[in-house]
Length: 153
Image 1 (tube, one colour):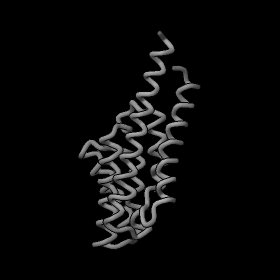
Image 2: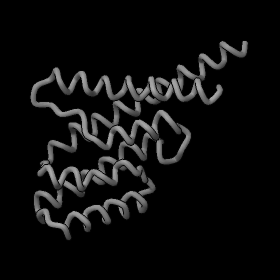
Image 3: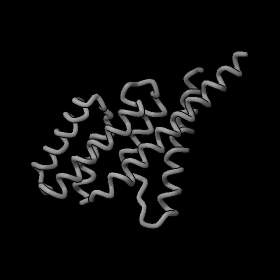
């Protein structure tokens, strides 16, 4: 596929994933499914799906690990300029050590600590949102490959 088609497919995928999360976020009470880093996640998952940084393990575990660090700091250590920096640094190191590097997840400790989020934030929006983006991404990859085969037959 050429660059124009790939760009359109990536945009449609990002639209579908964020649209789905946004729809359920606004229609389910007491459930958060959106967070700002998911916009950057969509760029990687739909724009460069073959990148190691866009793989399901990296997207899901990268977000989960850094969010866990952010919640831990919020709940047990506190929020200050020093702890914001420390949590972010630990998050980067943890992703690199676990081979789950996903750059958008680097924002999670900052987001979580500045908003004072608790443990439930790990499930929604972090885990469920990341899984939805990955599933839509895999669906778009399947759709793109199927369409490419039909066009070349």
